[in-house]
Structures are given as structure tokens and as C-alpha cells.
Image 1 (cartoon, rainbow, N blue to C red):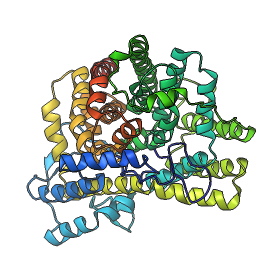
Image 2: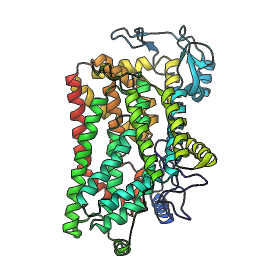
Image 3: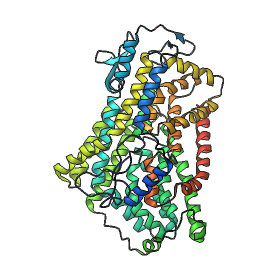
Image 4: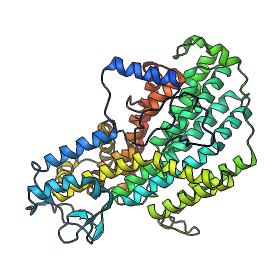
Length: 534
């Protein structure tokens, strides 16, 4: 997510006078106040040495839009017969003749972003265009929801409650080194699984790197608490709106579908990451020469520095309570309790419109309860929506690609070919293939929301043919996206975080490689088992 800071109000600890602007985040959202000048210069020097800079998610999606539009003139048009709820019927694929000419196809390309936001599909022709009547095909609901989450996160960060809460917790557990590492990693993982915590983490390096050094660990330990914690949480997203939410919407299912599997994955993978980190940290504590991070001259000063935490005020506690309660209520509101056999809890069936309203109301409540006042609260809401505008635009662009494919009637053709490729495989093999197919997509489109909006309309219907729930494809997609984004060099979260921690990227890769292998095997095992069990 982001550590936005507006024109007024406290900033996270990582921000410092003269700090530079961080690069755009992987999912298209504008990055917050970034690494200090030293880290930024290091990143710039590294970029000059490489001589190549991977394009942003916007550029990638524009290129994909044009490429897909060109391919629609080559790929044969065809459609499946569908059920009443719009799902394709296996075995009914047939070629179709298009009635649209080159001018209409060129107009589709021109209007792709607009259609991606508020296009409407005509039930008679199946074509999507702005205006008219029919089924809403645009991503306007998701678009507004993303902006509402941005407003809520920014207002909460403006209060300083999150930073103070983590600092206070670290101070209380200062004498319990192992427990402190586990608790902190679990907190960052919780942020990742619930709301895709990412850029917000940049504000915590100034706190946790000195803390790790004071405890007798190294810089790699402090960086890993943040990077691995939030990364594993995002890999096993439960209700993360930018991964699970967008993917579920694109797949035509509810965000709560498949949540039990994702909760189990989150608990197990977070525990595995904690064990991995603790083993490394204890090894370094016993023998500093086994550290994978290069020691720096300033480390001795940081170890000796008095890092007393600021007191957690009553208002901070209130803000943290509202912050946690909002996400807890979101989880409650999206879970289909009736389908799970839980009769004593009402199934609210909330979706993006209700959730957007929830986060907007919560943002206002947090600002007023924290004493920010009307002016500062409104400024933070506007600033937060602006910070998250990038993610919303990425979703819009990706949905526009889907509209181009549907209007050219090639989506079902691609689906038909993919079905032929995976037909005959067991449900477990199918689940593993879905994970592997999404790995290169995750690298090419590091935006989790853009990846979801791009891939799910094509991949999700394959679950119907394989006899598994579409939620399994959603879980496979987000696991692949989260796994890649633990190490991708195109991520501002990874490279900016390592620059702040002053840890070399190649050494981080050496550190995290064994964990990456374990996470991959466990994720595929979870997916295959869930598919086999139905």
C-alpha cells in the first residue's frame, strides 16, 4: 500500500528533510516519501550501471493493449454458449462472424480505458461501449473502492498511531529477542494479508534497523522482518482488496469465497517465514561473521543509540482500535457465512459499493477521533485518494484490455485453447499449472491489481471446465503475484526497502532463496490439495 504524507501532519519515521521521492510502486499507486537521499542515490547509481530500467505498469499495460488489439485481427473469433449467470458451457465453443469493421475496432482501441472504467455490454450484441443499457462491464466500483481505501490508510498514517504502536511494541519486547522478531513479522504479515501492505513499510526501516542492531542482529534481519513479513502476508492474501478483491471481482465471485484456504495458507506460511528468520537471526547473534549483510561503520553508533519509543497516547489507541475494527468488519461483511454453514452469523453480502462507503466513513471517523480537525482530515482524504489513483488507473487499463478481447470475440477462443492444453489433467495438476502460468504474468505486470484484472477473465472460467471452484484460480494468481514480488527488481518496495536498510540486492537474494523454494513448494501443495479435496 503506501505511506502517504500530505502537506501537514506527522510523517512516518523514514521521512527526513531533504528526502527524495520514491519510484512508483509496483501496482501503479504513487509512492510516498521515499528513501533518504543516500538510498535514492544508490538506486540511481545502480540504474545507471544497469543501463536499462523496466517500464512502469502503465507502460506495460498500454503496450499489452495495443498488442492484444493487433492480435484480435489474427486470432479467430468464437464464443461459448453460456448459462444464465454468464458461465461458459463446456463443449459448446463455436466460431462466429464479426459484424464490426476496422473503424469500429479502431474505436474500441481508442475507447479501451473509458470502457474499462464505465463501459456497458449490450445483451443483444455482446459489445461493450460507453453509455447505453445492459450489463455494467467497467471497473468503476473497484476504482472508487481503491480510492476509499487510500483515503482511510492515509488518514490513519497521518495520526502517527501505526508508527507509534509498532515502536511501543518493540520497546516492550526489547528483552525478548525471538518473540519480538516473531511478533513484528506477524504484524507486517497481517498488514499484507488484509490490505496489501507495501509502501507503508518504508516508514519502518528507520525504526527496525537500529533495533535489530541493538539486539545483536544484522541489517538483513531488520530488513527481512519488514520485507518477508509483508511479502508473505500479501502472498497469502485473505481479503487484500488490491489482490483478492480485484481478482474475485474479475472472476465473478465474492471476496469471501475461498477464504478458509487462504487463512490456512497465511497461518502456515507466516509461521514458516518466522522460523526461517529466527534461525538466521540466532545464527548471526551467535556468530556475527555468518551475517549475509555487509557491516557498516555506522552500525556501532546505531547499536549504542538510545531509541526510546514515544508514548502511545489515548488517541493513538483509539485510532488503532478503529483501524483494526474496520478491517475486521470488512472480513465479516464479505464472508458468505450461510454457505459455510454458520447460521448464527448474518451474511451481509457486501461488495465494493458498501465497502467503499465503509472506508470513507472510517477515514472521517479516524481523523475526527485523532483530533486532526476538519481541514487536515479532508486534506488527508484527498491526498490518500490521489496516492492510490495510480492503482485505480492500472485496474481501469487492464479492464480495457478485457473489453477489447470481448468485443473482438477472441476471449472464448483463447479460453478454448487453454482448455485444450489442460484438459485431461487432474484437479491437483490443474491448480499447480494455474500457479505456474501466473508467474511470468506477475513479472511482466508487477501490479497485483492490474495482473488480476488482466488475467482473471480468461483464467477463471478454466476452473469451471476443471471442476474446481473459481476461488482456487484466484488463490493461485495472488500466490504467484506475491511470490514474485518478494524478489522482483522492478518493485519499489523491494529495492527502496533494501536501499533504506543498506543491504545489497544480491545478498538479499542469497538470504531469501531457500525460503522462496519452501514457499513455492508449500503453495503448490496447498493448491493441489485444495483442488483434490474440492
